[in-house]
Image (cartoon, rainbow, N blue to C red; front, side, top):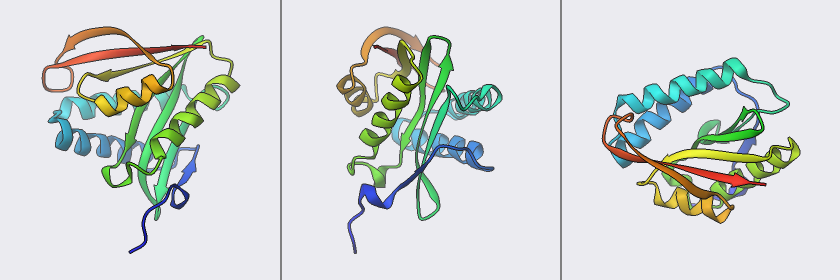
Length: 165
């Protein structure tokens, strides 16, 4: 069997019918399996994706949909929040981790952030996502806030990371 490479992945920047539902599904399934998040998390994701779609403007919002064999295997979006941009719904399926896809998505995010002349970016995650936090800090994001939460169907510590350009 051939080993998977980043070159095997295609990345598109437009949503297609089915993407919102499928990305919501992937978040629900994956975060349930890896972190025991409840259906509340899936609901949170679906609301955020709907907000993104309703406010979408290609000049200052972007989605990166990663596909392999016509299946979504990774996802990230940049949402306009005025002078700042929000990084949301970063997902790479487990079997596609370790090939540089996360770094590629972060590079594309930063490139678009600069292109759009945003002054800053931020994201929310939880303290359980150590690998994600490591990647964010590698790109200059700094932990700026923590709060206890049960919004994902279990008790977690939500963390905000900010990047200033």
